[in-house]
Length: 193
Image (cartoon, rainbow, N blue to C red):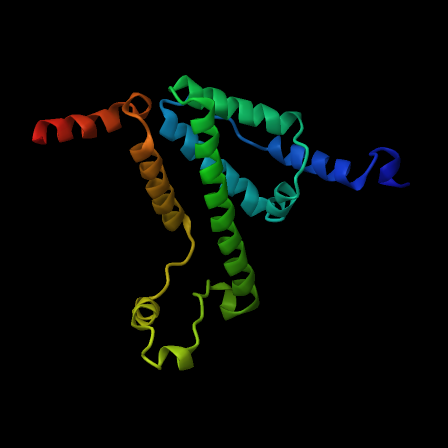
């Protein structure tokens, strides 16, 4: 029995698969306390989903038609961010920046995990650089980077990078969006002026 008797096309089937993945989004038990917690939850949920289904990034990049579960999740996130004072453009930009970051981070994580499973007894392997090129002395910064050891993608690295991104978003927000943390920074700057 062919599946295409029930689903009109391969594209429709892939859209249904993507929507089924969106149904796995875990909503919190309580409302978010601020915009940062909304974005942190989105980033962590996206990472969790992509680690379970690493092929989903390619599916999302293939210009799908988003279905009801994906739309429900996006509505929930946009509604939460707008409830904290974001306009739609700012909210979608923040979600977009985090989505790109998480996709890239998970791509490196899953790529490293695949290499580790084939080599080195399951241990993550740092990026390799040509020792012949580094020995020329023409790339002293890269040589120092290699000497200290590349940072491998892990939970701590994810959380640190996520904080940097959120701090950057916060720094770009008008004070009325940022909430108490941003206002403390603005007030401190006013007092020192």
